[in-house]
Amino acid sequence: MRISHIATGTAVAMFAGCQVGPNYVPPETPVPNEFVWTDGATESPPDEPSLWWQVFNDPVLDRLIANATTNNFSLRIAAERIDQYRATYGIASSELYPDIGSLAGYSRDRVPTGDFASTGVSDGGDPYNSWQVGLDASWEIDLFGRIARGIEAATGDLQASIEDWRYALVTLRADVATSYFNIRTLEARLNIANRDIESQRRFVQLVEQKIFAGTETESQLAQAKALLAETEALIPQIGVTMANETASLALLLGTTPGPLLESLPARGGIPPVPSLVAVGIPSDLLRRRPDVRAAERELAAATARIGQATANLYPKLTLTGQFGFGASNFTDLLQWSSRAYAAGPGISWDIFNGGRLRSAINQQESLTREALLGYERTVIQAIGEVESSLVGFTLTARQRDYLADATASAQLAYDLSLQQYEHGVTDFLTVITIQQTLLGVEDSLVQTQGMCAETLVELYRALGGGWTAGALPELASESKESSS
Image (tube, rainbow, N blue to C red; front, side):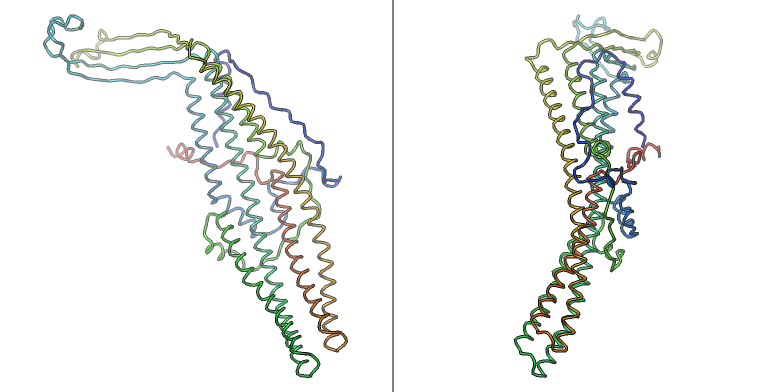
């Protein structure tokens, strides 16, 4: 993306005149030296945060993120906003240069007889031709930096729009991964429900055999069938949730659910998640998070507009000039004797305006203070998001490990109770209770496994992972320039 001319235009503007207004100084926001929920193993900078999804080693996820990066509507809208601010920068920087226009005209005129105020016709009354061709130029000398400050503001806006696109990219990739993990979690829950349904059906058959043998009652069979129906009711519930999640993922990919279902493998496990992840230090976060970077650029733009408003208090020096040819006969139009020209400086100064200019400065100063507060809020919010994501990831990983142990124990307890029930050693109620416990912990385990992956995604999003320095979208205006 050819935005390198921004620096050149800004440098030219800096020397165009004496700039009024405050010069921008990046704010110093105090941040903690380390995150609360870290230890020595996790304080080092994260490895390749721009490609964080590769830690899951899932080719399907890699493909989905690649497709979303190309086709997502929100990301493409953000790219169009970059193009808009790029054009705004071009408009602002064009004021550094002379404005030269051309003119050409013809008219058929008649001056009334006796109109002594008219020139060019001695007696009046006779019609005559008037041919004109020439150039008209004006150039404002940026004595007090009004144009230079405008370029600074436009540069800040453009750079902020680039950071907004990067933040949209970070958010998009995290949303795609989260939606994909939700689908995989729902698939795992569906598998568990189907497996438990088969197990419960076999148990119902076993109860029916015992009723035939006279060792169980109809009420116990009804209770077993009720538990089976309750488990079967999970299937449509999971199906509805999966349909909604698939539609959400399809929207992120810029497509409809049909093509997505055709390209998405029917089954896939929840990818394993590491127990530790490097997060770096808070000061690294400020340089990494696109929303923090965007807020800082917006503050720079607002500061420059104070100087732009202040410059309106001072005189404006404009150089103007005209050169052309004029004649009543077309054949004489380009004769050197038909030339006409005028050139000279002009000064304009808005001396009295009822306080309008001062109010404009006060307004812009307030907007700058607002931008500073917004920047500080964004910094605090970014640190808070990392802290909460660290808590969520750490505790969810711990919960996953506990549930894995609970599931193994519940499965063993169910297998043993079923064997004991078949041999008449234990009663019906014990088997039913353990069966319900097993279903609950199995379902909780897969949900926690999915949540563990989602909290890791959220942690990487909070860390600003998902974009690469130097990588920018291809703009429509640049495609036109390259083809022309």
